[in-house]
Every structure is written in C-alpha cells, then in structure tokens.
Amino acid sequence: MMPGMDGLETLRHLRADPRYALLPVIMVTGNSAASDLAEAFSAGATDYVTKPIQRVELLARLKALIDLEEANRQMRQSEKRLRDLTASMAEGLLSVNDQMTVVFVNPQASSLLNLSEDQIIGYPIERLLRPESGLEKEEANAMQSMVEVCQGKSRKTRGESQFNRYQSAPFPASFSAAAIYEGEQFTGAVLSFRDITVQRHREERLRLAANIIENSQEGVIVVDPQLRIIDVNPAFNYITGYSRAEVIGKSPQILSSGCAGSAET
Image (tube, rainbow, N blue to C red; front, side, top):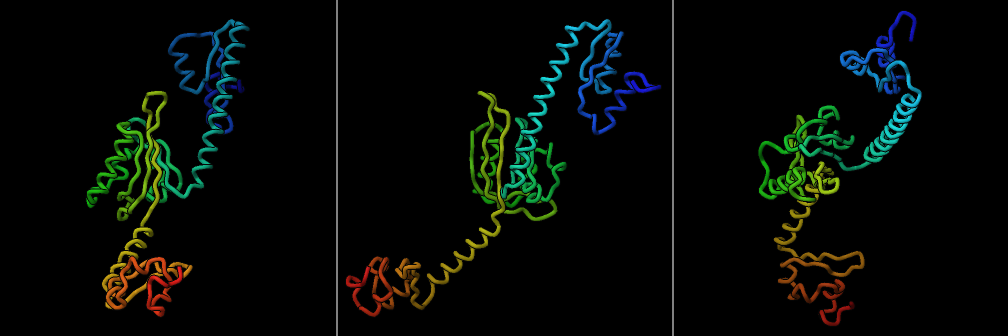
C-alpha cells in the first residue's frame, strides 16, 4: 500500500491511472463481509483472498488470473486486427446483436451515414437505415429482407435500397446481409453496403443515350473494339434495308459491299 492509504484507496488510485486500468489486482483482506467485498469489486478488484492466506488457494487464483489475462490479451489483439482490416474496406460494415442493435461499425459506414461511431453504436439498425418515406416498392422489399436477416428470420440477402444519411438526403445503397449463428443459436447479423449514387447516375445516362439512339431519325451503328457491329438502331434498318440479325457480328464494310452474307466475319 501507499503511505497514508488503505487497500481500497490504493486500488482506486491505480484504476485512475490509464497505465494500470487493466492490471489484475487481488485484494488480501481479513474481512469477508459481503458489503466489504462488494466495495472492493466496485473499486476495481479482480479477485480476493482472505487471511490467513492459503498458499494453494493463492496460487490457484493467480493462475486463473494469468489465464484470464492471456485470453483477454488475445481477444484485444483479435479485435485490433478486425478493426485494422475493416478500417481499410471500401464498403460500410455494421454488425448487430440478436436485438438488432448495432454493436460494431467501421469508419466507412460512419462516413456514409454521416454519424460518429459513438452515435451509431447501440442504435437499432432499422431506425438507423430506413428512410421515413420515399421508398419504391422494390426498395421497400429489399429493406424488409435485410431487416428479416437482422431478426434471424432468414440467413442472408442482398439488394438495393435507400439508406438514411444524417442531416442529408437518403442515398441509394447496394447491400448484403448475413445472419450469425453460434451452433443453432442466432446471435446477430453483419451488413455491408456501399453508396451507388454514381452508378445510378451512370446507368441513367446510358438509358438516356440508348433512348436517344433508339428514336433517332439517323442510322446508328455500335461497334466493339474489333470494329464488329454489336447493335444498330431502327433507323439503320429502315435506311439500309438490313435487319439487325443480318449485321450483328459483321464489319461496317457491309455497307460498301452491299451484301450481308459476303461481309467479312
């Protein structure tokens, strides 16, 4: 003990120092009253022995503490490896317990949802992700399938839906979810997701371009890098007299040869 301090004061002093916050401490006491032991554990004691000290008992308790500390050390290392691994992921990652409460979040998920880790941990995942309104039917069905995985009603799912973003508009997300089991016991689920806003915009531009080509009054030919025709629009069929089936896979030189059958393939 430190001068002028009893055992409990010394223990509290140790626990207040971050360097010793996890240090295992066995209290040696001559009083085994429940209230005194409760106070010792409340102050941060790991275990206790009563006087007179029995060597066999002390050694057994020390061994148990050493084994426990080694297990805790390995668990902390595993948690660190997991955090290091998930921190480098491009996708957001959330894990929930069997009550659908978030217990793990990686940095990308925090960024995508515009919330800190502390704000996300402990939050119900459905309330966290589901927008109050505006979901299309397919998006609502996909969201419900994700919720059912997090409830343990199904094993896994994937899909696309709108996810909430704090203090911003919801964003389109592609996600996959899988339930976690220990034996036959459902214990939670893991969800990975990514923002597909750019992909949606690109798809919309492609649809717009395809619509323009389809309705153009001018003939349009689409070729691959080997200059083989992979598509034509209706105006091409009308202007040239060739059907789509006649020119697919052929060279554009078909237009100068005048014969689809004799074009180089």
